[in-house]
Length: 190
Image (cartoon, rainbow, N blue to C red; front, side, top):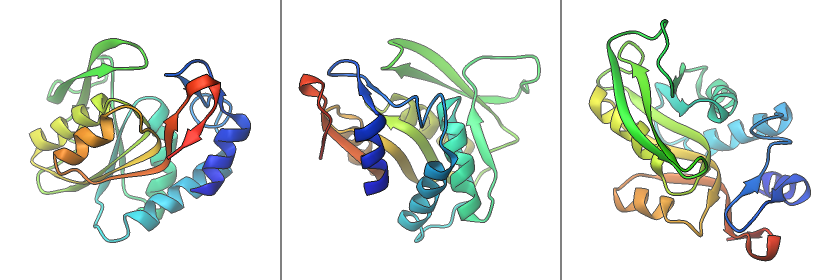
């Protein structure tokens, strides 16, 4: 997606060979017009599958998933929570996730009321590095007896093995921008 790649080149910041900062338009401050185009692109790429709901993980994936949902007939968006709270149902799906960015393991949770057996679920997230978050959400979809129809990623770090791991498991991955390298603080696309 050229619009996204251009935005990454002009406004993205490379902290080191592992970290690309896009907080000025994607995951801290959000540019709604760009996210709208991202939503349209996910619909174009997944036009061949029926989507009953979109699943993401809090917090950065929420805005992206909501924008995408409007192009899939305003299907519900569910986000996996990273912390238990009093307003979270007791009857929940749980999965362990390792965050590459935060370098820690945590548990994600989704109420059993919000993913049902037989539903077609599309996962949407901002980044794909090692695949931990997507694998955790996939586990929750499997626990529910629902069907994973694909994974939509805004920015894939292709120099890490997340996409390969998912594809080897037969999971369809559609990434809008694939970063080949951040070496020498230079963004190189695949």
